[in-house]
Image (cartoon, rainbow, N blue to C red; front, side, top):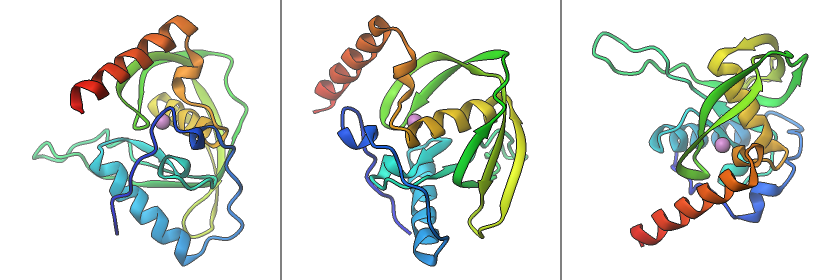
Length: 175
Ligand code: NI
């Protein structure tokens, strides 16, 4: 178990198209455990393997939408191996997105409100489910990473440049 360094823009690795996972091995499960450690530590709700520098079609996610009686988020970890998006809804929804590879920056992104997702879990079992709400947004955001796309690519050039400028300013202030 380890917290891995997160790849941030403008690192060219974020532009790679990730390769399918050929086999669900113990080595892959170790990577999945490290990705969860990294995601919870950040903290974030989703992480694609390329964000820790591994160009494989693997995503971990935990929306942590529910809390226990002490107000602590209840963990509901999900693993997506070789995920595919099918039947995206025509209806769009807007969500204010962020990304661990573009730290502390947020913007509204419009995406299909619902989609069907097909994937393998960490035991190699196949799933096929209809996603909506934050789950649909999050899986589409993470799927973009597997195609070398980040959320600011969905924005106008003006908005994208503004975010990158703010990010650079924050980095300079932290240096
Ligand atoms: Ni992201």
